[in-house]
Image 1 (tube, helix red, strand yellow):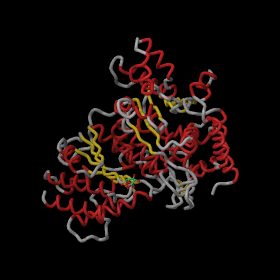
Image 2 (image 1 turned 90 degrees about the vertical axis):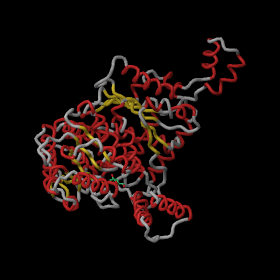
Image 3 (image 1 turned 135 degrees about the vertical axis):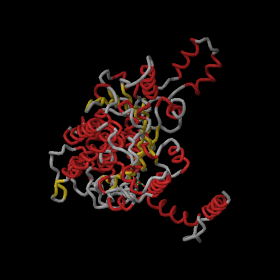
Image 4 (image 1 turned 90 degrees about the horizontal axis):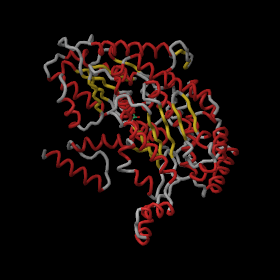
Amino acid sequence: MPTGSERDTWALLEQHRDQTRSLQMRDLFAADPGRADRFSRNACGLHVDYSKQRITGETISLLMQLARTRALGEHIEAMFRGDRINVTEARAVLHTALRRLADEPLLLDGVDIMPAIEAVRVRMANLADKVRDGHWRGWQGAAITDIVHIGIGGSHLGPQMACEALRPLVTARLRMHFVSSVDGSEFARTLRTLAPATTLFIIASKSFATEETMTNAQSARSWFLASGAPPSAIAKHFVAVSSHIEAARAFGIEADHVFGLWDWVGGRFSLWSAIGLPVMIAIGPPAFRDLLAGARAMDGHFRQTPFEANLPVILALLDIWNVNCLGAGSHVMAPYNECLRRLPSYLQQLEMESNGKSVCSDGMPVAHQTSPMVWGETGIHGQHAYFQLLHQGTQFAPVDFIAAVAAADSLPGHQAILLANALAQAEALMRGKSATEVRLELSARGIAPEEIEAALPHRTFPGNRPSTFLLLDRIDPHRLGSLIALYEHKVFVEGVLWGINSFDQWGVELGKQLAGHILTELSGAPAAQTHDASTAALIARVREGLRSQ
Ligand code: F6P
């Protein structure tokens, strides 16, 4: 339930929105040469320029006031302390503990959880080193050449995104594969490239019950045994990551090869746990520790920095402004770097599974819009696809441009072109192009006045479209860790301000339940429940089609 002062601040924000509705960012830049400096911050190797947001100094003051009326500082401490802030599951939220230094105790229910975390890290590093240097041998004595990570959602997106992002550091000795979809043709295609005797499967599932992952794991095991390997050979070719250690063992994986995680790690926050095992294998334990160190640096920044200079708080408040005051329904993630191509999907789960909620933590309906739809694709591709809508569409969508100055492995001239495009798109969205500018440009090209007037509506750009530019010197494990932790904490702050629990995901359950019923019906069982006419007809059609295959 919002407090009186919180309601007052929302009212002030709305009033401020109405008063500033006609402001144009290009005018604000012209009037204030210090605007870019005033609305840029550096922390943990990240430069964040949010001066191309539709804000003034007063906007920021009011947003900061909103954070204070929500007692944001207390919520931050409650999370780091291990309070059970995931109220619907009565769980602590301690992914931050996973990147904490081992010698800094952290008590949960009176027990220091750091020794258990460090023990898993050490076991992960042992395995990673053995696989990387060829000492981990398959059942026929050959070194491992291929790692196949099987998982979905939070047990897939983070490791895949990080392995892609850190591609230049990935050992050339190993090929990394990620299998997520239950679409069998996808997995079959991967299997065709593998030799059972040199393949190591990682089965990653916090619950060890997710249908897609379990189906793929069973198929991996059948494929492996079909090569003539005895069941005892599974020990050398399958490891698991799960909080359900018994279930992993029941699958046939040796206790020594099961890496645990805890109920206080949400799936979409689990990259830092043993779910990150393929990343550690790919880039090596020291670089994985750098990734943790980068996230830890952001944790420290988030916990200790005044809100006015606190990157996660600033980004969250800008989202609140765009969504709740300016009416943005979506948010675009546009990395200008092919290494970050899986980042939009990763952030989509992080933001939408966390904050796509309509009720507050106490079960009451929310008073405000919550998560926007988060989508995107690498910016350079987006320019030739969805950017048309961003520039001239009837809806506006704030954009996060994410770019690195240095390229790890590029060709002469390419990096400057890539970055010029990122900078140009952000500038174009902000500036737009007025009718006067179009007239001048076209008449300079000798185009007839009637033709110019006809072209005018199509060639003008409204501008004033907000974006934030996140610039890294380069992509390395430390900076990547900071970047991901920045978004994690941003999502948390938004959840606090909207009054929702960002750490459960009940909304994914209904579809899973119905899929279970429909699956039995597809195999010929009578309907366990009545369906609407559309679903019933589709089930009949699919069942028929499957039968005749
Ligand atoms: O269905 C959604 C979800 O529960 C996500 O929250 C989670 O990341 C994903 O499925 C995978 O879950 P698990 O790691 O238990 O297989």
